[in-house]
Image (tube, rainbow over all chains, first blue to last red; front, side, top):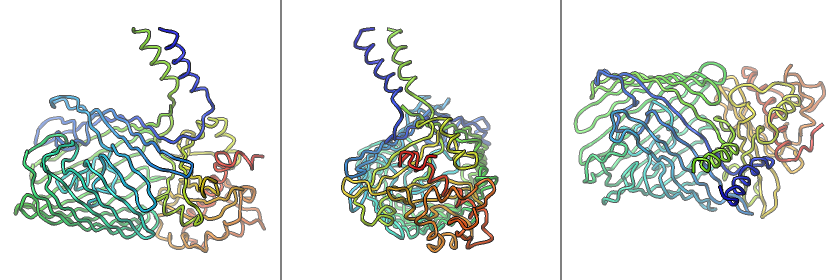
Amino acid sequence: MSRRELAACGLVLASAAVPARAASYLFYFELQGVAGYSTAAKNVVYSSMNAMETMQKPSLGFDYVQRFSGASGDIAILAVQGRLAYDPDGDPKVEPQLYNAYLKFKTRALDIWVGHNRPKFGLSASLDNHATLLQPMAMSGFGFDRDWGLGFERDFADGSLGLSVTTGSGMSLRLKNSYLVAGRVTRGVLERDNSVIGLSAALGRTLDVMGYHLMSEVPVSFAMGGFDFTWLTNSWENRIELLGGSRDGASAFALFWRTGIGLLPENRLKLEAQPVAIIAKGKTRVQFAAGATYLAGADWTFRVMYAYDQDLKDSRFIVQVYYYKGIRF
Amino acid sequence: MMSRVAAWFLAILFTVGPLAAAVGCELNDPDRDVKRLFPESTGYRTLYVSIAQKGGDALLRKIEARLGDSFKGLFETADVPYTMYQILKGKDVIGYIHGVNQKGQYGGVQVVLALDLEGTIRAFYFQKLTSQYAKLLRDPEFGKPFVGLNLLDFDQYDVATQTAKPGSKIAAIKNPAPQAEEDFRAALRAAKKNLILCDIFLLGGKFVK
């Protein structure tokens, strides 16, 4: 080892001895184990949804938020969130996944983000589903959980307004003449008012994808409107979403309801049920999921889920062990 | 080669320490909230701090002693990162905003304080409160008696016995919703805890006894 490298190592170690001060970043290490049984596969499965979808699988990941400030205050936020997911039947077996990967600039008028983020469409735009087993409609073909592009956001005293222009390709950045323009306006601030009403609209030509897998090279038309309502009271949470429009030239509608109750001190135990009805291409598809989440401590969460899909004739029982730990450098 | 890799690995390893999974209370929308609480402000700076970084278990014991109660639950560990906001007018700091999580009647509540540079409460409000009586506790009239108080005033409130010294300014704060007594007590505990944390992380221990 050279003297220069030795000195550099020493500096790194010395930095750890400097009295800790306020930080401008958060960094979390994430680890999860997912396993269950599928009646359709008649076998043990290691994914909460179809294995081609991204969430949830056994994985190792991180979550990083860095704030940039100048003399006059905060200027921008960088958010990067990634995983290495393991699928024993996949090819390859280990899949790198990138979720948040955006830079958000703060201006006086609005916030502007560039990168991989949530498109401004429906409840999926505001629900944090990164670790959960129950998933919103974006994971059932009604929009994208994440997409590449840019967006604009502005919060008002009684609500918010958001617009995104993205590639319509989901997890992967693909430029195949696809695009998605989405907008969402909300009335109410959930934490303050305990209720929010949202109206969304999206228009574009999107790629048919499942996670990182491209199902078709040809973009399909996508025109959708949506209404959603979230209501909290005491320990109850209710979320309802109505989506309707057309996809690939055929009409598509969805009704989503998620209800949940928090139990035990600090709502450490949460029980949820989520019935969904989808009418697409003249065919009705019913999905039902129910789950329990237990916060065992500041770092450990245990989840279980039962999910039934009428179309796939599949009942899925899933168990998840989730670890999320902050790291400081 | 292996010794080089091992040395770098060890160097990095020793600089890494646990922080926390649970994140402290952040403002719903800092742009909107800062402007509402400090209309004269021109910007704000967000800081992440934790008891573990500042002084570890020894500091935690001091905080608990000042609070008069032990830290417990998901959001009361030494390594939970607190999100604090320095409020700016031009390049000058004119105040602070900080919110804390607190166990309430129906899960958690979040109590936010806006402070001036002296650590005096300029505004108090619940950010998160899902109780059916939330409207009464969110009423600006409920927050008014908190304005002008500081940590010395809250020393007159015994968190463990949930009693305020008769005749004190804390005793003058009345619960507008008797059915939500647990959330009312949570508000007082959260306010005191919040002031202690602000004193340590933002005011340089101005009120340390």
